[in-house]
Amino acid sequence: MTYETLLAMAKDGRNKTYQTASGQEFRIDVFNDCPFFIPSSSGLGRSDGRRAAERFVERFNETGSPRPADYRDVTRNASYFLALIASTDEWPSA
Image (cartoon, rainbow, N blue to C red):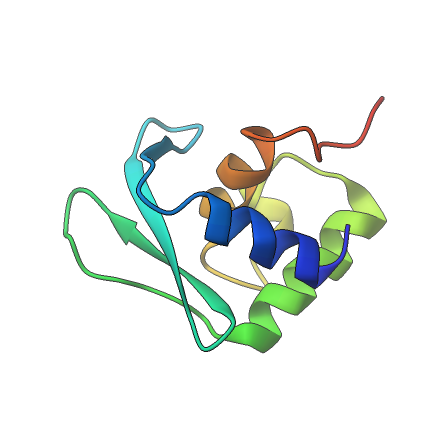
């Protein structure tokens, strides 16, 4: 997966509601070519910035891990990225 693929998924996912593995609902949007997430619980957008999203993609490509804890040192938004990817056909085959 590339960052551009992740960005395209985020753009396509606008106006949809997603759910993390722990059941938290959120929406996604994009600003300045960087995805950001809007948890339903707070309604406030959150992002760690483009570089963190790029590092998430790098780690995801290396490990394919579905566990947010495996990205803890990369971004605090891993559960959102993983839920977005899981909703598409981009998840790597076993």
